[in-house]
Amino acid sequence: MSTPSPRPSGPANAAATPTPQGASSLATGSSSGSGSDLHRDLKNRHIQMIALGGAIGTGLFYGSAEAIQMAGPSILLAYLIGGVAIYIVMRALGEMSVHTPVAGAFSHFAYTHWSERAGFVSGWNYWFNYIAVAMAELSIVGLYVNYWWPTIPTWLSAAFFLVVITAINLVSVKAFGEFEFWFAAIKVVAIVGMIALGVIVVVCGLNSDAPAMTESVREGGFFPFGFLSQNADGAWVGIATALTAVMFSFGGVELVGITAGEADNPSRSIPRAINQVIYRILIFYVAALAVIMAVVPWTTINGQMSPFVQIFDSVGIKAAAGILNFVCLTAAMSVYNSGLYSNGRMLYALAKQGNAPRFLARLSPSGAPYLGILLSAGITVIAVVIAFVAPQNVFSTLMSIALVAGVINWVMILITQWKFRRHASAETIDGLAFKMPGAPFTTWIVIAFFVGVVALMVLTPQYRPAVYVGPIWLAVLLVAYEIKKRTAHSRENA
Image (cartoon, rainbow, N blue to C red; front, side, top):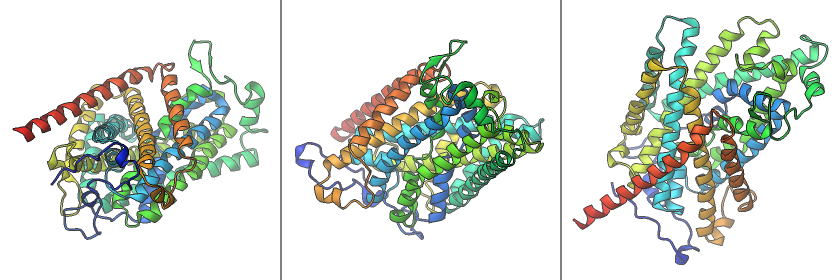
């Protein structure tokens, strides 16, 4: 397969309509396909649930406890602020994805509208991001299984689910879509059920005479720690530091852009999924946490159990832990399922660009980039080893590293969209079917917000090491690109 040449830069190109390099090879074919292209077998219901599931994960079910401890009731405002920032990122990605629905999404766009180097960094960084996430999820999945079967080794559970999810992804994109549809449905039903139960408890006064939120606000106010302060233990708290935990919860929503290359009607399904991000955030984050703190005083949420378990326990539902354990297990599998899908497609796109070995662009007869999937799964086997050696010590570290990689992804999406518009003609911009609101002002405002989030990570001990890993990782990618470029140049002149 031929490697597309880099997009020429300079003033002469500034007014040109951006025509993606290699679009014909990266854009997917019909659902039947010939085995040489990805298949458009993801239906609208798949896309909607993938988008929905991408916004709901371990960060909400368990990570929300840490966020509540940092900010108290004002965590609701933190989720709103973070949600708006993520919505802008998604609109930036959606503008490009609807204009050119291809595999590789933001890596392909960075390669086309920014530079070959940017495409290389964006693609490999996103791959690394989901490798870290997948390893983290698999490293603790055994703990969920041990709730029912304590004698099963955690590494065996990790190995079992790794094999099962890998097999699902190797079958076809339709198989992935169906499993992810039901994984997401379980999470959605669980949260909707929790919200409904909480509303009943508050309205009927089943747990107290006054909602816990009312009592909590009376005692410490809506902003008990202000914007940023230090508690008695010397730890930094407040709505500002809570944003670090909040932003981790949103990791994965950009998966919608990856699905554009295999959506049967991307011009309809992608805008619909992205526009609903803000509603999902309001319902599944803000409403859920508001109900939790209305039933359970936020000062009693200490992270020893999920806030979702506490709300069930507070009204005497003894099966709560079992129910939530099952939901968390499916949430972890959903994350790994999505991560493996995304990594396979990203390696496929990188191979098409010439930024990864060409064999990773090979597809199975069903249209699955099987070598990219197998390579990603093979590296994730490290999680099985971690689950065997230190299952309880690695999760938070991997999650913080994933957050830094996620912030890099989001910032690169925004810069790429800015460059996309900068290089486009006025006619192209006017004809965009799904425009990003407020561009380019919103672009730079949200980038500044993400820079602030990274700065705040330094104040949080569990996130601080990842801030140092981020620049090192970027340096590794830039060096790798230069080595790749010089190697290719030497071969051409040989």
